[in-house]
Image (cartoon, rainbow over all chains, first blue to last red; front, side):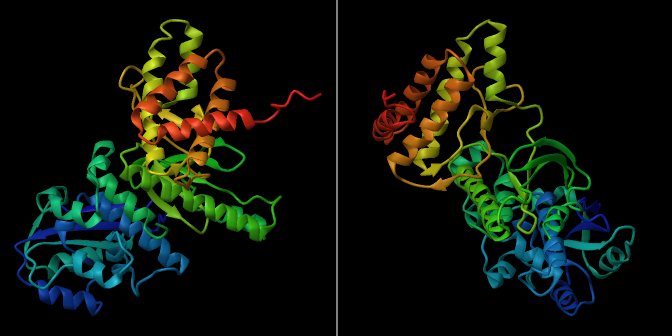
Length: 175
Length: 235
């Protein structure tokens, strides 16, 4: 169901992703995350094309945290910020972060390699139905993503939507 | 310490294997989040003044990343950039497994002697892609047949060309700059691949057919040719 991936560049960490639908306590979850009680970035799954996209965001966040160069205040908010094609932080939270009224949420957590306790905490706290992370595409708002990331029609001919998104995430600091 | 700067990339490159070493960068192959990836590490050059080196290396890394996105937006195939580390100047990008350079393909085709006409399709495609790139006002800066890849299995008609190595790229709408870009390619092309004048002309024809701004560029190309090095017959 949930998927754990180790970060080759930072082998002491792993990234676990979980996807939930029919979520009843979105507002409470957001509050818990903001208060630091759960170690998870709560992402709006409509804005995700593929789990790889979230992995790239997490990888960059860990790298920037280690280098002391994060743009936001915490690792989790940095993950959300990295998903955005722009450098406006509040806009990134608005568009990519989960909202109080959302019924579905994609949770990304960065934790020490063999330690799954954060994952267990999240699984216990979310009041909703867990679905396999591989099903993320059923939530994806493709037209919304194309519009937000400004993907051109010619770009779609030379690569997938995921590639277009990942490339922008990687290059946005200098574009 | 200069040696520190070179070593600072070591942890990032731990899981990767050195594949090629050039004057500018070392290319490694490895995995990035499970995907086959290439890491281009622009290592510190100790023969340069440190501040200059940092500036230059950073600029080249940034230009390469920017150009990659600009080309993609225009529909030109370039490797997907996955992650850029601006502290060590490493670019993690898609590894086009099984691809060969256009240079190697032309050399093998010429050596095997059979069907040199198949290269015509390749020349047409090169002309088209370069026309698209210049129409986007992207100047590659280092056009050679070693900087063009053919995706695995696409050597035949309908060649799937991928451009690489945008470290010297910049933006310009000037036909002069585009003409120079093409001149660099012509020089590299003709010196690497003997007896290919007609093939290159085919490339230029395809370029002209694909871009409305081409006539001005070709005119400048002719002027640059006349200007070129060692043109004066003075002893």
